[in-house]
Amino acid sequence: MRILPAILFLLVSLAATAQGEDTLKYRIGLRDKVGTAYSLDRPHEFLSEKAINRRIRQHLPVDSTDLPVCRKYIDAIKKVGVKVVVTGKWDNFVTISCNDTALVDKIARLPFVRSTEKVWIAPKVIREIADRDAVTNENPERGEDWYGNACDQIRLNNGDKLHEAGFRGKGMTIAIIDAGFHNVDVIKQLRNTRILGTKDFVNPQSDIYAEGTHGTKVFSCMAINEPYVMVGTAPEASYWLLRSEDEHSENLVEQDYWAAAVEFADSVGVDEVNTSLGYYVF
Image 1 (tube, rainbow, N blue to C red):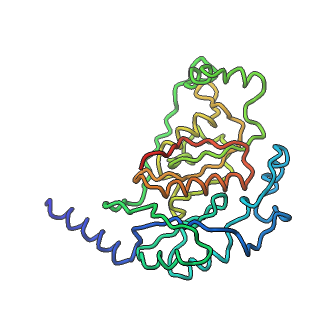
Image 2 (tube, one colour):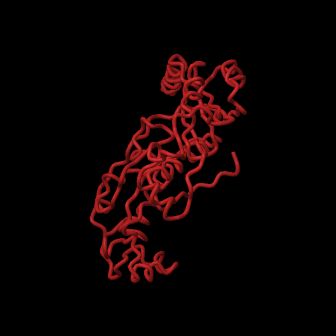
Image 3 (cartoon, one colour):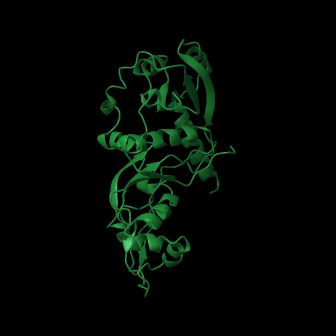
């Protein structure tokens, strides 16, 4: 019976190879943004009104780094025969997926390219599609403290004093960048939270609510608003839930995902970014 799992694994691996799935990703650094269709005189074309108003309020001018990566350069790179995974405007790069080093060499010779760097090697074991755990939604015990299970963590940093002064996150937009937000959309205790949207930079086709649980924990600590059960640090704020971390590998490409996520958060006008990630060893 032990032979069957081995055969199944081999078949899955062969199927992935047959489909031509790329096993390498490269970061393509660009020299400039010459030829861009965007202009600093028209920031509303690449930044939301909320983002522009925040920049004005915080005296942060829009400059050339805010201009999107030049579309002509992106198209020229794609024309070589590679897949564009993500782009980053502040550091001016394009991340591609490609197995053919000859194509990468060809891209390196394009006049607007300043560098190429390998940032991802596919893991040897092919990961199955993320699946959700069952949610029982049992009624939690209610305590005597208004903050419930969060009472110690709130008072540790005097968060309760901020709440007493009226700072509960009202009018604030917060982006949480993490590895996934498992079952956030079906957990009953999170039904009163304000989620503006989600975006997955690792795998745009995946179900972000089926991915990792760490983002769920972070989100609940901040956004939950169930008095005597658990009240978070910013229960009246609105949230964007963004995924940049791949729990199943440690590769430089996650820096690219994170950069794209932060840029997106800025473009939609968030007031604060919460990220539990730090990259220094790969």
